[in-house]
Image: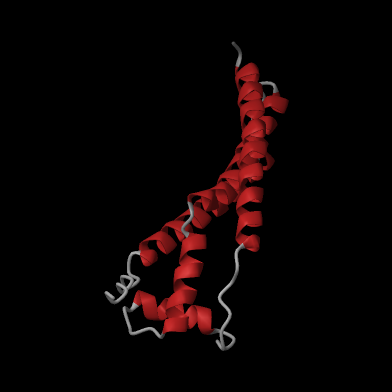
Amino acid sequence: MTTSTLFGLLSIVFFSLIWVFAIIAFVFARRSMGKPHVTSKLDIGVLPATLRKVRKREELSDDELSLAREVLSVRGSVLAFAVPATLFCIGCFYVFGSLEQLHGHTPSERTFLGVFPMLTSTNMAIQILRSVRLKRRLPARKAAPAR
């Protein structure tokens, strides 16, 4: 097997993975849009302030707590990783496809432009993991009083 055939096969694999992860990301986005959102008298900019309070483990009002639970459950979903996975596969497809087209010649800088979506997707995955860690800092739900 030549390197050209190897890069061609890798390109086909990552092209297929692009579609798989894109469909999963589409399903994730549709589910997120279909969920009922917290409706209250919260002001503009309250989401970053609420997440800052969660990060610093400060006291939250009931509205802020429900908003934080909702946002962190959506952000921390396993399906949310499909978005960075799609971007990563796009970058790999570009790099391997460019290497396939070279047929063994020396790669240029243009060949490695696919590294930028790969770095971006890594940053997105790290941000998702930060949201998952932040979800653990939410106060436990209070038990309902016994009747």
